[in-house]
Length: 169
Image (cartoon, rainbow, N blue to C red; front, side, top):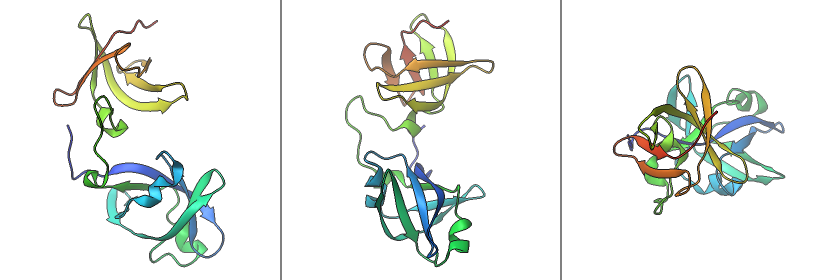
């Protein structure tokens, strides 16, 4: 179920950069530095989301680096490592027809066209060729390519389900 009050995770603070309070950011956005375009960052500490603006940031090689407000040295930056970075849904652009944010698909029930419930989407993987749904049924994981129309026949966010035509082993 879609909700505007749960932050959408756009990345994670993955490490330290330098001694002046900068962090490395593992961004899930495309392109990677697009995470810097979103105002109103929220950082997750112990399961709680707190507003924490970034003061400056830039792309650095294959990653992104940023300095957050109130973080002035390496020790303060170290306390942020592994924290998720999110924004409120209203900060995100609207999706087009047949486009979905991964967070909207996680948790949905996956049903084969024959009616068999395969499980729920645990998470998604990016493979380069196409995204892959990782579906868990309590005992196994089933990997299903997210190919709209060919394999994924229907996504109904309101019903909380994805209909697929996929043969699994």
